[in-house]
Length: 137
Image 1: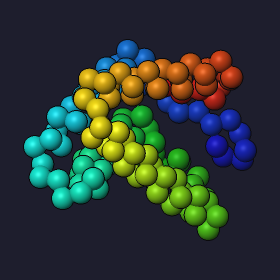
Image 2: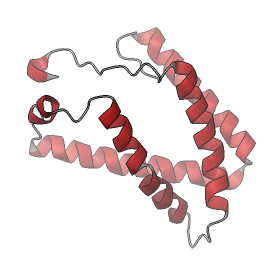
Image 3: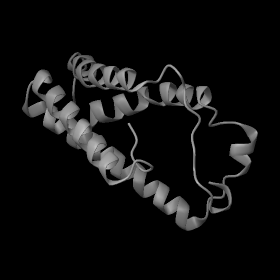
């Protein structure tokens, strides 16, 4: 988004909507399975564990999609206000993760997957209905 222009992200041919849905279903189901074998001291254990495990795959997707090119990195201008918003968004993300694991502790993995996929489908659909430019899958 250099100079207030339109932001675009290079697309990856392998990351079709079907692949994203498959990854979502896998993540919701396998995430519950993965943390069931870990002795939980609190609800924060799976939150921090899964968020830590997601760092490497996220970096790999960033590299594969060209997010770490010299031009993109040099265009970053992070003001103190922008840094504050970034920190706040990270904290909100951790809160959302905690809420997800709290919900998982109340219902079965299958029910949680159905709720998660339905929520994602409704979110993406409503976003696409509002604006094709703003929606993302």
